[in-house]
Length: 484
Ligand code: ADP
Ligand code: MG
Picture 1 (cartoon, rainbow, N blue to C red):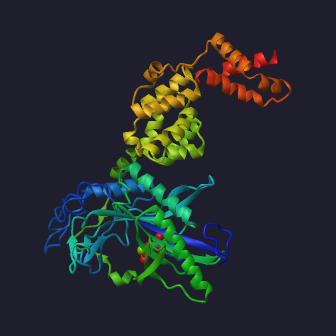
Picture 2: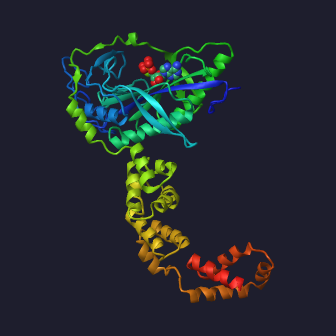
C-alpha cells in the first residue's frame, strides 16, 4: 500500500479532530448537590434530580462553571459571557431523563489553542474550536447478571467539559501529543484529573484521509477511546481502512465506529446521527448562563503558571534546552521538585541528575515523584557534595544508589562508607607509581606512541584508589609522570 501513516510525504494525508470529554473536578454534580467521588457503592450518590424524578429542577453549580472558565482561560480561549443550556434528546437506559443537558449552539468557551511539542523538537499550534459544559450519563453494567443489565446512576449528572479541536492534527503522533498536552494543562489548572483509566478523560476521534492539497473528505468518528496509546492506534487502523476503501473504488460513509484494541481494528457501531436527530432545544428549566466580567477577571488572576510559561521560564532562567524543560514541566510535582533541587545550584546539572539517575531510580522502584525514596532536599545535598568536591562524579552515583536503597542522607553515607574524594597529592602520586610499576609492558607501549593508553592508566589509578581519587588531580599527576 502506498499510504504512509506517519509521514507527510505519502500520497494520503491524515486529517484528525478530537472531541475530549473531561470530567470536571468538583465536589458535587453540575445541577445537583450529590457527591462525585469515584468508586463509591453503586447508586449511593444519586439525588432526585440525577434520577430525573418528575418535577425536580436543576440548579447550576457555580464551581463547575468556574472550572470550565478556568480551563477556557488556560487554553487561551474566548470566554463567552452569555451561554445557554440545551436538551439533547435520546433514549438510553442509563439516561433517565431521556435527554442530556448540554450546551449546543452557545458554549461557555469559544476558540482557543493548544501548543504541542513533537519528537523532532518542532512545535505546532492546534486550534480548539470550543469547550462546553454538559452532564455525564449513568453507567450500564452488562456483566453482573446473565440476563439483566444493571444501572448505576452515580455518574449521572456529573459535569463534563467537552473540548473540541479543529481538524488540525495530521499524524497519530500529533494526536498523542495533543492529548498529553491537554491533560497536562487540565492537571495544572486542577480542573480535571486526566485519569483515562478511570474514564475521567475520554476521546472521540474523528478521522478522514485525503490526497495532498484536496479539500477534506468524509470523516468517521471512533467513540470513547480511553488511552493515549489506543487513540494513536485507532487513528492508524481507521486511516488504513479508509485508504483501502478509497483505493478500491469505494466511498467512506460517515459513521460512528468503535476501536477494538485486542484486534487493532475499528468496527461500525451506527451510522452517524445529525444534530437534528437529537432535537436540541433550550432547556426551559434553566436561565441563560450570564457571567460577570469581573468574576472572570478574578479567575484569570488566580490561574497558576501554565506549562508553556513554565517551560519558557526554565529555558530562560535555568538555561535548559527546550526538550529538557518540556520533560520537567510535564507535571507540576516534577517541576516543583526540580526547582527545589536547582535553587542556588548548577541548574543544568540538577536537570541532568533528575532526568538521568533520578528518573531511572523511580522507574526501577516503581515509585512516583510523590513517594520518591529521595527527597528534593536530599538530591540537592548530593549536588552540594559534588560542587564542593567532597565527592567525585563517579562516587556521587554510588552515593545516590545508596540513598535510593536506604533513604539515608548523602553526607552520612559519604562519612560512614569513607567515600570522601582523595585530593591529597601524595596519596595520588603513590597510586600512580604503583600502577606504573605494575604495568611495565603498557608503559613501554605508551612511551612507544600508543597515546590511547592514557585512559587505561587513569582507570587503573582510580581503581587503585577505590574510585575516590579527584579525577582532575589524577589526570595531572599521570600526565606529569608520563611526560617525565
Ligand atoms: P459532531 O458534534 O457531529 O461530532 P463537530 O462539527 O463538532 O461534529 O466536529 C467534531 C470533530 O470532527 C471536530 O473535532 C472536528 O475537528 C472534526 N472534523 C470535522 N471535519 C473533519 C474531517 N473532514 N476529518 C477529520 N475530522 C474532522
Ligand atoms: Mg462528535
